[in-house]
Length: 172
Length: 172
Image 1 (cartoon, rainbow over the protein chains, first blue to last red):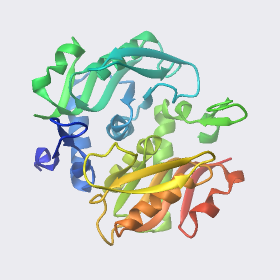
Image 2 (cartoon, each protein chain N blue to C red; image 1 turned 90 degrees about the horizontal axis):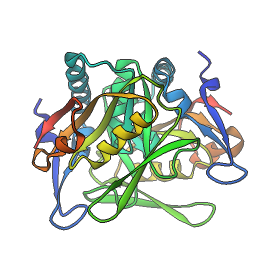
Image 3 (tube, rainbow over the protein chains, first blue to last red; image 1 turned 135 degrees about the horizontal axis):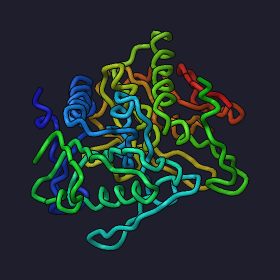
């Protein structure tokens, strides 16, 4: 199946001049969604990286992180926006084009020495991903890889992510 | 497995006097997460309701809606907060204790006559769920059921939801 063709371009979202990659046109088709998850899991299994847990980035990252964790039979820890998690957290700030954003994870979400796969829907500049990696490492986890449905290659997000095995199913 | 025992009580979140049911302690254990999804899917299959698509409610609803859709082999349509969806949407307002909230869905997220299961993590007063049902019906979908991980029975959310088959794996 041509999964790339299932992604819809929406011009001027979230602001003028941006061509937004809309994944909902892929999600809404059962066979396309299933094949995307199966192919993502196959890429991970082929790579032979160790995965003890999935860290899924709010909120579209949950849509891929949850079925990947389910298929792998591992737990899932949510990376969320500031103030959403009820128990003790660690947090990391990162810069946006204008201003600063913060991501949080429960301090007990990852055990020391656990191998963690970070999952999000889209790799753009890599800022959120880099902050999510730092969260995992802050509590003693080992980031064994990073997985996306889509990578926007022209934004060089891999450079921001650094030396971590990085997987993307679809590339633009 | 005693899945109920995997839920953590966090007092005074999000505000004083509220005892928050924290699902992250269940999510982070692979076998518990897998069993929760398997049991939710088994409840749906036993009920024999028709499900052509899952409508998952942002953002914790994505964590259950996505693997349920994956296992059933159907598509998933996100119900999101205002302004998050890039293409044409329908929206429904609903009242909170103080003020009004709005949920949105893509107008083309559900086809006319499709049977849709609404999924969220927790049934409290049922306001968000009721609004999500209205979204599906606004575009011509048929809500065949509503599924939660947790139901807080003392809040009578089923009364707000109304005549739709309503399933919850864990009850408090």
